[in-house]
Amino acid sequence: MTRTKPSTGTRSQATVTAPPALIFVGSDKGGIGKSFLSALTADLLDVAGMAPRMVKIDEQERLPALYPDRVTTVSLASMDDVRRDPGAIVAAFDPHYAAIERTMVDGVTTIVGIGGPQQTAVEEYCALVDLDADLVEAGIRAAWLVPATSEPEAMRGAVRTKGAIARVLPSAGQALILNGGDGDFRFYPMMTASMASTTILSVTSALAGGLLAILMNRMSYS
Image 1 (cartoon, rainbow, N blue to C red):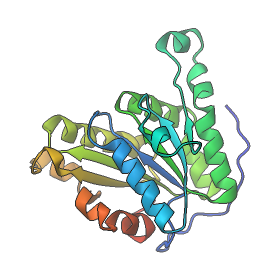
Image 2 (cartoon, rainbow, N blue to C red):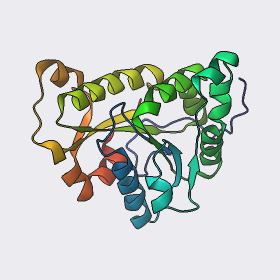
Image 3 (cartoon, rainbow, N blue to C red):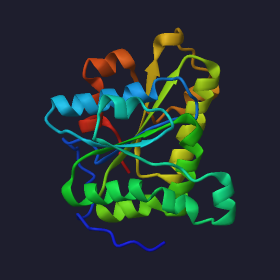
């Protein structure tokens, strides 16, 4: 699909002092605090005077309940619809891309909250439309926040998500947000190696303002 993209110039490699224009919050494991992290990010930006727009790709209604009239919902096509019309997945994501286009024009940060069951579809969409190339061309910085609990399945999901995002959205900065609600974290050798270049932050640090700090000027962007 060919789209006309507003241009905002070439992305700078210098240290930044503004949040990414596009912040994804997602992993393929449910019940790990994705909606909480999306809301926390929105609230921190609100307090800093940088109120974001929000997109929900999730069956849960937590974000619309917290931010009435502020959340755009993306309802994904069913597999039957996709089989009949492979373009259905692109059409389903049109509200998401429209929000990104508005960000390209006005610079207002867009937060995209993704449900666990929808994570793979979002990755497939990013690859299908080559979203990374669009963002780089428009000079848009993106970040992907990956929440995880200490549950082994959640940690494996975080590792898988990190690898998938590196493939489909390589220009995006990544941060692993540790939710200690299920106990202490144990990082196994494979997980430690795979997280070597990833910013890691606890939810406690995020609440204390660390999340805003890494989004503003400590996250590595390609």
